[in-house]
Image: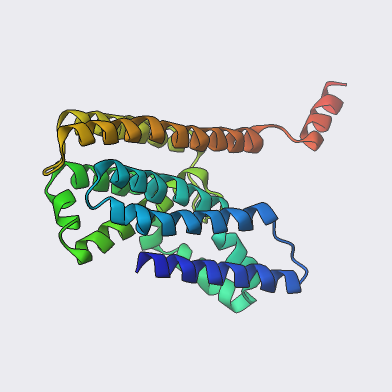
Length: 250
């Protein structure tokens, strides 16, 4: 179900890229590649890795890194909202903007809410019987996968803000949320190491927790670098600004 949804997303995304090209609106190839790579990682995470995760906690944790962290980051970098706004007619773009500017969407996509949904869901997964339920019920398994993907996606989008938003949150506030999220994610990995989820052997829990801790650090490092580059790019004075300042000094 999750795999089918992301395939439909990719089909719509590629249609948008093609339609925008017909209207002579070029779209960066690296963003398209990011969308394709993100969808592939989702399919891998819910496919072979997800199947292996039923009986191997380390494989399950690989699925967490791919589905909840790396794939969402790539999908955010593909800027799907911007792509849709370029491809849609004016009326469709206005309706999409109205939906994205609605109160429910604004609340969910706020960095604090997005971080809470993301890390809160992970704490519930590994500190309650939910982890065991997801491997004994297909419906729960699908719901957990969907939540992990969407929560990771919304969180990465709220931090990077690669797409336009009517109510942007400043970089300082997003930096605080990001640091808090990273700390809670690291604490959770240590908790899993010391207190394995129900039904998970201690040795597997320790290996999975180490993968969560160190593997998550590498992905988080990429997120931090992208965030800092965007902060610098938006706050650095432009050439024209520097020229006006120089003229004023002269």
